Image (cartoon, rainbow, N blue to C red; front, side, top):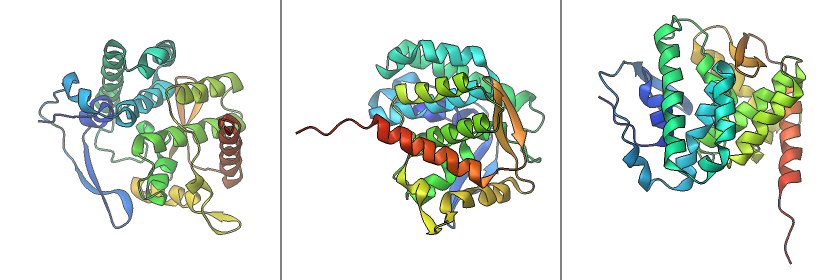
Length: 254
């Protein structure tokens, strides 16, 4: 029986079948696939969370809305101001619908124990997992997923899969909800032409146990898998997020 105590776990991981832990320098390197007998989401448990932790689960709702439910994205967008204010009714609704969509995928997606290589619910996660490790967890999971989603949204747009307006809506919503879409660790390099973040692709392939499979967007609410990621388009997305972060920095006060 699970009793998740954070916004993120109530909306996402608490209803899943995966139980993982970090080991040997890798994210979720060890664990089990064990469905719970029951999950109790008690909203009162969120009352003691710091704002950073309270908003962390919002990004998983945006993630599943982007790949599965455009109407849910519209709903999150409309409720953004109430979510920023941590209005209880708005948070309850986001958690409930997000958990519902995750459970629906696990129950009807055809591969609940992930014997195959397709994991659409990991949208934005290949970069997020690597970024968490590179930052020594200075960047939390929710914050890293926000950045990972932003990268893959821009990658989808630059690939010609996603229209520019939808890409802007997703990035603007992430920022409106309080997420920063760039971290300096994205530009950590061994040599001038090799960035550590790109190693996340191979680590993600190994994590999948076979062929690299990354979910991108063919439209808002429509995820589609690809088996190849171009480093030049990834780095272009990172540079755009860097420029966006500089532009959004508040001016120095004197």
